[in-house]
Length: 378
Length: 208
Image 1 (cartoon, rainbow over the protein chains, first blue to last red):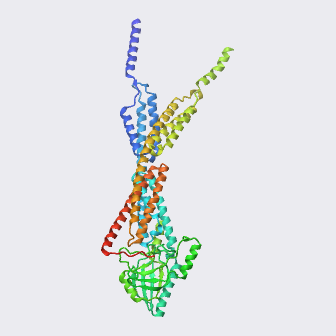
Image 2 (image 1 turned 180 degrees about the vertical axis):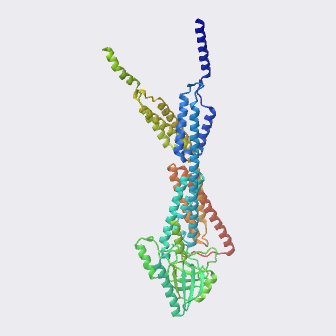
Image 3 (image 1 turned 60 degrees about the vertical axis):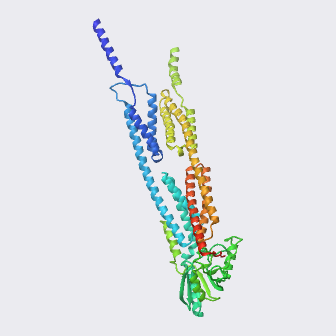
């Protein structure tokens, strides 16, 4: 009996000792921990918090909780037959991290593509807008707005290149609004060219000039600003046409001295300036401002539409000099020297000179304005 | 009688002794620290670390809520307190780190601003010297560009004042690039005109 009891105790002791020897501290596999640490760093680098906030937050929450638990349970003993729960948890966290990474990459790519597409459209629109504005000769009308737009487009591209897609889109939208604003300014300033009543009025002015030429069997001149063309009539018929340059703001309606605009109206040649009497080879001085111009100027000044200290200007001529490298005009009509030579021979003091915006509603400026409006709607 | 009293009081004492108090002060302190990290620009300059910080705080708050759902004497806020303390100390690190990043961004923005100012100054000086050439419209446009660039410098300063260094740097770099392009354009025009002047002699005068 005594021997049997001693044996039993010995067996129990051996079993307990062997169990104790086999039991171990519950530890997370270091390779798995390192893999998740690396995954976490990768998620930081790819800005997962920005592109997949929910998925990333879930991963972070579980990862941080796990690390805290690891510290708190560092002395927990696991028996050999027990499954290490930390391994399963780490696998789940790794899956969450991987999934967050994938979601972030997908969202990032989707945002990049959207920003890239929008910016490409905007850049194309800005280029095309700028080309059309230059073609119309209306760049100066827009003042500093073109440069402001260009800077915003560049800024949007810079954000895109740095991976700030939302900012790129927002800045691009700001630039698009500026282009819309410029289109609106052009529409207000140059809308006359697309306005049937204005064009009809100009057409009548041209007809009256041609009729005068016919009835007086004399020369008359018509300058078409949209076409940038001077036409010479004799006996009511077109006998010559020359390309012209206008003031730097030539397509605008002249309002006051120094605005760079070329006046519209019915004028007459009041003096012929031969070589030596003008810096522009030869010149035909017009009777600008006429009574209509005076009235318009006074009305605009009273309404505060022009600066109070502004003058109406004068010395509007048809002159040569277009071939000279440093010649310039602030509102006159400029021809090549050989063309002013020919014109000079054909006209006299008193010859009517009619300057109009356009003679048909499908003029180049109206067409460009329509294109700009379409692009705005698009 | 004594036995009866002990029977009645013992659960009350158990509840009184075992009922842990929610760490409201620690929550407030951790929230304040996270708020300070936000104010320091951590979401912008240290986005992921800030997300983790918020996660720590939210995790601790969830733990408190979970404990509050338990019977009073079984509540244990130790884990939540540990999370809150960790959030607070992490916030200190994030604030310092975000401060460094912000300072780096500021320095880059200021540097870009100075480069932009120099480019605009050069462009404006060239515009002032530019002889009026054949294409007056182009010159007027260039003048408007130079003025526009100069005006845009104020936007760079405004962005710096708002501590939006990313915007300040992007704008300043765009201004610098365009300023240099304008300067090159004017210089080319000046060279061209000077060459023509040499060839043709006296220029025509300005009209009214």
